Amino acid sequence: MNKTIIQMLIDSDSEYVSGQNISDKLGITRAAVWKRISKLKELGFEIESVTKKGYKLISYPDILNKELIEIGMKSDFIGHSVEVLESVDSTNDYAKKKAKELVDGSVIISLEQVKGKGRRGRSFHSGKGDGIYLSIILKPGFEPTKAPFITSIAGAALVNTFNKFNIQTKIKWPNDVLINGKKVAGILTEMSADMEFIEYIVLGVGINVSGLEFPSELKNIATSLKLEGYDVKKLSIIWQFIYEFELLYNLYLNENTSEVVNILRNNSSVLGKQINVHYMNQIESAIAVDINNQGALIIKTQEGEVKELSSGEISIR
Amino acid sequence: MNKTIIQMLIDSDSEYVSGQNISDKLGITRAAVWKRISKLKELGFEIESVTKKGYKLISYPDILNKELIEIGMKSDFIGHSVEVLESVDSTNDYAKKKAKELVDGSVIISLEQVKGKGRRGRSFHSGKGDGIYLSIILKPGFEPTKAPFITSIAGAALVNTFNKFNIQTKIKWPNDVLINGKKVAGILTEMSADMEFIEYIVLGVGINVSGLEFPSELKNIATSLKLEGYDVKKLSIIWQFIYEFELLYNLYLNENTSEVVNILRNNSSVLGKQINVHYMNQIESAIAVDINNQGALIIKTQEGEVKELSSGEISIR
Image 1 (cartoon, rainbow over the protein chains, first blue to last red):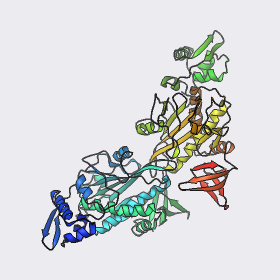
Image 2 (image 1 turned 180 degrees about the vertical axis):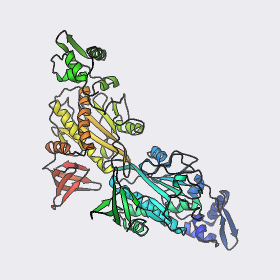
Image 3 (image 1 turned 60 degrees about the vertical axis):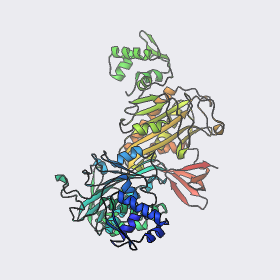
Image 4 (image 1 turned 30 degrees about the horizontal axis):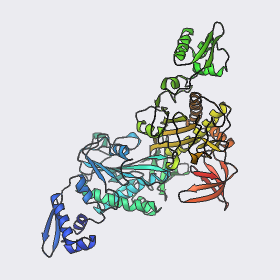
């Protein structure tokens, strides 16, 4: 769908966009533009049209349904097939069940997760309508060792997305996005693979958007955009995130990791800090030194040993 | 089930085994021994019992059904839950679908595979009744990078199993077992995992036992035990293979890889040979130099570069 009419209207920042301009940019006739505008109005978009000036977006709904989500996608292939669920155990588990039959780039979104998953079997609080709970199915056909970088790409894409809405976020390596030290988004990457090739990757992303209450045990560690004072439509975040993710993912398919790594480095909440690395049955004190070109965290232990973590669990001391 | 009565009778090599001996070894009463012998007779085992001498195994059926397979398992946990199918697309695909609900060590066996799978999407010829087509579900809870070694363990266990029946085999790294240069067994390891932990591994093993005909394109590269002059019961191979695999797998869970690597080294069909390494879009000439402690193949290219392949596809020049 590339650059959609919606995006042009949003980007114009309450200015009028001429029908000619749209028709030129999308390579469609003026009549086709008018038809699409009508369709948008049907879907709930409030669009003013003034002769000789063009179209202006007054407002749009923030309803997560398949048609609305798909019509605003400005990505090239991710999110062209979208499935929206009322409620699900977890979008990742659902996506894994359907991954074989769904095309590369398919997106599953649910209004609620009753068993939202984090890493290491932990739960991810997913209240109805409070956030964005989505999974992307990817079929890159590369080897399993390249999979962990997908988590890094998603983290970088989230930071870019939030920046677009003037929200400053940090990445707590490898898979949490923080505002003011509290988790606002989490990433869980899973895969099905043989020893050489990935059959599919399921990238799960949960974003706390409008929730105002968290269970008491999460109050000090989780937050939402709304709680931090940001009012952004879920629909806009989805469109932007899928777009940013696809950009960085395409770079990775061309073996370019530096863009993502730069974002990880420049927005890290852990670099330079004293951390604890949590292994299976053991905790090690270290300093987070750098992130390398594969997205691995370079740490220096108290004994002065330098190690490379390709994935893992850390906490800031 | 540990050491079963069946195994004691088989191991005795047509000698009589006293009821007292069995009762001592298994820690059950003489009456319980007698009950188990009766059960075995019901299942088709022909067992002679002579007063004061004991029991002697005359013959046993080679029928793959759940009860027969389970009763002869001498492993500690693998194969204690067995499912036998008449026909299936592939035992790996079936096992992957059921992996979540099945316990660690569950075994799926099918009399036939209509879409038997090899690596890289290739098919594995799986004629009805001609071979052993089985998948083992493992839930070791370690990181994905440790998964490729499971293929090595299975290869080593196959060589040990065949040795038990006086059949000399070679391993064509990483996943084929050969007799006289022709493939008699193949291994396909798949997994579902997040970036840190394996949810489950499905280890698929196909063994050509009694098939006498292969499709024309396979005639020069595939063989069966029968075609090579060996007459071994499928049931015996399954019991032995699961036992050998569990032994080596338990070593790996305790981080011991040397036993497996020694078997791979000593029975390799490729070490010291000129090989071609097949990459995605490229073939490289090299010499297979060694197998390292992680089961990776060490090669030396024509330019003298030494490389480590943790998995991959090679052919002998």
